[in-house]
Length: 462
Ligand SMILES: NC(=O)c1ccc[n+]([C@@H]2O[C@H](COP(=O)([O-])OP(=O)(O)OC[C@H]3O[C@@H](n4cnc5c(N)ncnc54)[C@H](O)[C@@H]3O)[C@@H](O)[C@H]2O)c1
Image (cartoon, rainbow, N blue to C red; front, top):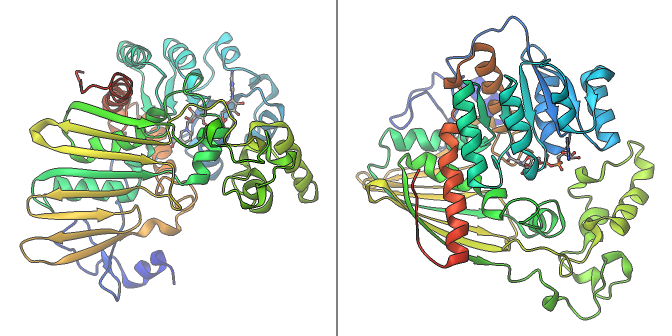
């Protein structure tokens, strides 16, 4: 029996605990199962919010799938996407009129406003232009992170959002994940006394690193954004969010150490498909990842006919970056990166982003005056120093659609839901990740990168 059904059977009235604000169910082994209550500000809306998606790739489809699942909340009425098969599939799924399908974001703004909101899920270096244009034309915006590649552009977007009074929701999806919502609530309620420090780890997992930051779209920091923003603006943001104090100083170190030409093994070739002598034993082999294990195939736009997929995968490995040797790319993103941060009230945090792990899933330890908590995005263990009592907590959300697959602890769709409600009610208070609330952690990221490059401690001023 899964946890959701178990909770239903037990009934959530099984007794409020001293730890959380809402009732929780208790499993036979003593584990507490919590559910995050629905946002009390949500209202029934008469007609769905309409939106235009810019970039119908991975993230464009995450929010598109929310619209497909909840048509009473969100309707996608336009799309800008240059890859024909993505444009076609997206338009078909959402029944988008031909007149509202274009190849590039600029063309959406050649016409008068024709929706309530713009969803910006283009690559990192194509956030600023469309966001500024959308705000100037009176659209509300769901903006993928990172906000923009430079501090100045982030501040420009914030200033224009304020000037126009439009909503900009930044996709800091971890703020909507039940696990982190609960962690923040417990801290705010004093479950571990006064917070002293936080230790946070983002284990990227070695194949995810190879896929996205060595071979993939984020392999070159100059063409996208430095990895501390591209990958870990989430981490800086969530650490800041749970501590809930201003960041004062930051220092960072880290390098690209492994995925470099000098580490290319003897007998390796430019592509894994070129007859590489060590391909079968290489942990980063593209053939093993994509062809043998069929991992992360979303980037390949494979034909729907399954019998044609194996050859299509091999063709992609022969022709795209995804088939290139990890040691022979033009990548520059660090593969290990550490950051220390001093917050207000003498709270400190240390954060590590690590490529070389066999596992993924963020790990966080929070140390308080009266207890501590240790979590891995599924379980949260709290120890009370006064009683020695330990409480293990898990979210009830594990069988909610998207919870396991989104990699964000189930935060993607709750964010989409809050955004839709914020637009429908014209009330940004429904969101926890408006641009005002999100910009500070981006500034932390820019300062971390400057610290790493200049080898000095940076003051953070907002
Ligand atoms: N919130 C998160 O946790 C999270 C996770 C992954 C990615 N992201 C961010 O979301 C954004 C999109 O990432 P993705 O994984 O979906 O990438 P993706 O490559 O799958 O999708 C981006 C899409 O934009 C399209 N595009 C390129 N140029 C365009 C143009 N001129 N006009 C319109 N569309 C254009 C591409 O063809 C592609 O389909 C990035 O900024 C990324 O950093 C956020």
